[in-house]
Length: 111
Length: 112
Image (cartoon, one colour):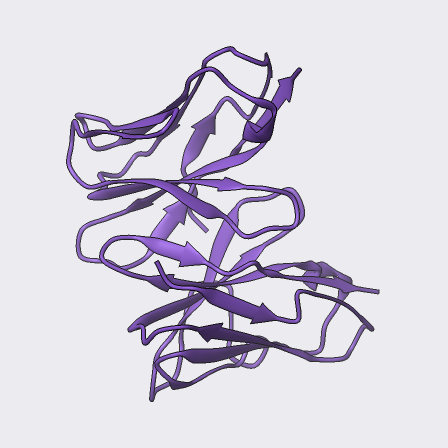
C-alpha cells in the first residue's frame, strides 16, 4: 500500500543530543500523528496535529504540521536511552478515516 | 484513550493452519481496524471492521484469507487462514477516536 517517506531511516546519537526527523507526502493531509514503537509492543501515540503550521509539544517531544500540509516534523530534545525505538508518522486525508503510515525512523541512543 | 487487549500476544503456527486473533476494547468504539506489520516494516491496513456488516478490505487483502468479525462495538476478531511463512507478522488491532488512532499490543505470529 501507499506509504509516507520518513527520514532519516535510522540514526545513532549520543545521549543528551537533540533529534530531528521528518515525514513527507505527495498528498495533502488534514491530520498527522506521531508514534513510538518499542520492540514487541504496539505503537504508542505521542502527538496528534490537526492544523497546518501547528506546533505541539509533549514533554521533550515537539512536532509540527507543515505549512504545505504535505509534511510533518518531530524533534526530541536532550535524548535519553529510553528514547530508543522506531518512530512512525501517520497521515490522514480529508474525507477518509484511514491513515497511511510512514516508513519509520529507527533511533538508537548511545549512553 | 481506549485500552485495547489482544489475544494471543504471540504464537507459533504450522503451515496450512488458521489462527484467530481477538481484540477487546474497554469502551464502545465506532471504528476498529486491523493492521499488519511485516518484520522490519511499517504498518499496512488490512481492513476496517464494521459492526453488523462485512469488513471493508484494502487492496491486496481478501476476506477468504483474513475473515473478520465485529459482533459488537467493543470486540473484533481477525482470522489468518491457511497460513504460510509469508504470513509471519505482527497483527495489530486499532481503534479510531476524534482524529486519533490507538493500537493494541499486537499479536506476533510465526508460521513454520
